[in-house]
Length: 301
Image (cartoon, rainbow, N blue to C red):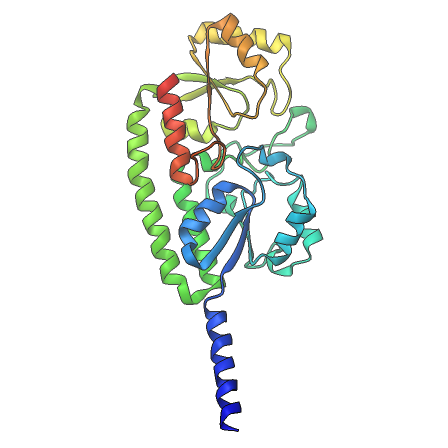
């Protein structure tokens, strides 16, 4: 009887210890969010991304493997502002996991933690191109927003696992302090861009421009998501000449033909900007991302 009692007590302690050290399973819509979540959650989280940093997250596809992962998740992190509108709602519906549905603690839309730019005023139609009515969703490309993302994740993790709230807060504060220090270094390195006009391929580098004080004169796309035509490229050549623009910034997954044309006829340099953690080899965390962006801009700019 005493032996049975000891076994039962040992089993209860074992189960309690297992629950106390349970890892929070996080699925993020991008590698950027997954990386920040790992910095905040440390050993208490298993943080993964549903998409690859080498791909445009607008156009992900809800795969069976993703459905299984979301079914098992404790927390879903999304960029929001309708960035994932084409695939995440279907994924959440198919996964049948009430913990991570909107309104519950396991669902965190990070766009609520930042001030969005380009919020639409008035009615929006498909004739305007791929316009995000709620605002431009590429806010992670301003490192100052990285701190806000980290703090929001820390608060949500604290609701899910209150026992480690102090550690989540400390990790988020340490992340923010490092980011603030690094931001000062990055901004100093890019001070030569201050006030200069550039052209971007898509309207996705607005926050990067705000963070480092350069201006965006135009986009290669005549409307968001609309491929450039011969006429629209000719108009860009006029802008390049009139404003003496020397740089075109683009993400690696956009076509090269238009950039080559503008370089050949307008003398403009094309700088490929890694837009996400995982976009290229050596970008394993949020700090790496901006190190590589700054390197690209200082090397070619």
